[in-house]
Length: 214
Picture 1 (spheres, rainbow, N blue to C red):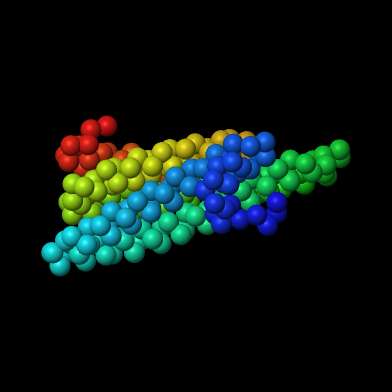
Picture 2 (picture 1 turned 30 degrees about the vertical axis):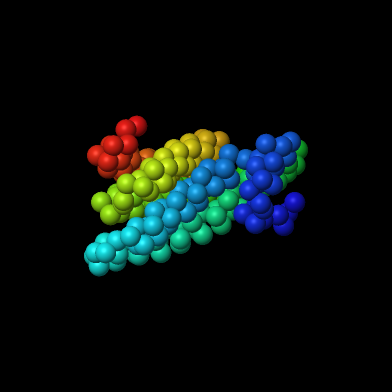
């Protein structure tokens, strides 16, 4: 399965594999799929707004946000496969021999390196989804009632992807021996979590103002 690209699978095939006996794809890939779906819904919302808006200023905002949404979707789709590859690297490291002190030290070094990379992938998913929430806040005033449900779905998917991805990154950092590197990862997680709380509140306020209660 080394050359498998899950993002090129059909959705049905991906879900079958997600629920199967294989250890991959797993939670990180599913969270990335949620994030990519949120970005795609943002693009849909912008596209629909562009077809109905007559304001040049609104059209400029929606056009820029649609382009950014498409770029975010492509970026997060790439992270689905990156998450699987990072998981494989962790698995390979766990299988390294550790019968001698030198082997044990090498295994620990390889495992820490793999865990650090496996932490960075969900952090990238979270960063991209923060951008989605920012877009949602920016375009909400230009969104017509018929597509507010799509905007709300994008917001909730992005929020879930952020929360789950940050948790996965924290789990990976928590099993590292290199406490200095783990501390750096935790600091990044804490910073992203603070930003997520602020943007989530802004996005939820915007939805509530349009009649979409939590």
